[in-house]
Length: 300
Image (cartoon, rainbow, N blue to C red; front, side, top):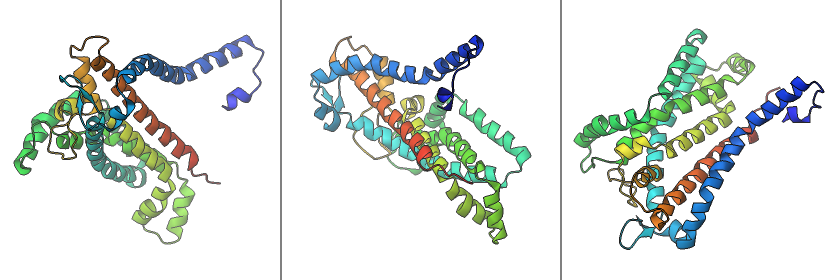
């Protein structure tokens, strides 16, 4: 925002450059507003037909049944269940990797490891989905009785590895931003390397670490192909990781490829679920940004 406070130059090229930069910086805001406006009309139509209380608190989601029910609770439960399993995998492994990369890995190898992790982010999630369904699930069925073919457990475990780079890279960047003088002060007091990493650097970078976890959670909530392939598409209000469930994203895939008549309540339900997903991920991203800005460590 400092650039907006500066007096613009009279040179036409500089004015044009400033205008272009302002337009480019507003793309994210304009895109967000466009998404909201494109969904809002259909969402309003849905809530004219379905009470908000039923949408939030009804325990069933059966928009295509003879007696349809539009309670989003089963979709939310499935979404949060898969996300919790994914974070259970990604957070400890990601933070351990971040500590290793930031504090133990030589600087000449650090860029290579981070580059490999960024390449890992580029693997199509459909590959993870089929890996969970065809490899992980059969292995889990040998040790977990009653595990369904489509289940949130295998989807969440594989998703945890898919979002692991988000945790490790952002957390490692936060830990790298901690001044070296703080590390040297801890060593001067007799601290060992693991004590410096866990008791000095990690707490000092806590805001960035928390932001990394929240962003990874947002990424897991919005994941589509892994849950659509491996977790199933049966809305069930359960927290049992062995049962087939449906998430908000898997329902959107199912409904968008179905044959719901345009203008029907089931058709508008698709937009209501999408809008709920949008609000949820937006809230998590705003929360992460707030934590970074509110609790940013400032070193003199």
